[in-house]
Length: 235
Image (cartoon, rainbow, N blue to C red):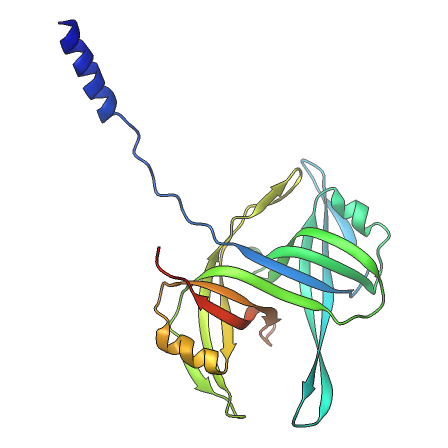
């Protein structure tokens, strides 16, 4: 009788084991920017609990040699940034216009204002003066649209497509970012554009290296100017 009860108990235990649920895959998104503060950051406070918050803009400068005009050209990008936590006061209390800033963060979109910005995870102040900036983004993303291949007026090949990124967010004491599932446009040029157009399939996992740029409209939507797009192998 005892043997029967033991077997019955074991059988019931096995049938009641929890079923493993599929964990939603998160995708890394890293942005590194080095540029100058456009204006002195204004610090405000969010209540309950009280947390310092700063919204500011940094300018990153990029120079390149134009073979057609045989001269150097400059391009400046302006990045809206959001930073919160006790480090805000430590970093920005005495910061001013023109301060060189190095930040690490992630892409984000405000659901209330429908504005794109950079959510800052860490920040360093490095002095004053205008410098050539750093504008780098590396992310894992999912191909979310068909790829459009076009020829520009200068006979350059451009591949345009959208990707979705399921960002994990980050938490550090009072400084947190819950992460978002966002979608961004991507531009890829040259022979790499032709290759990607012929090899890509909707839903594929991609590894993208490039820089952060903006659509010339009122919303200044972010897009990724890709230098390299790798189609990840199937698991």
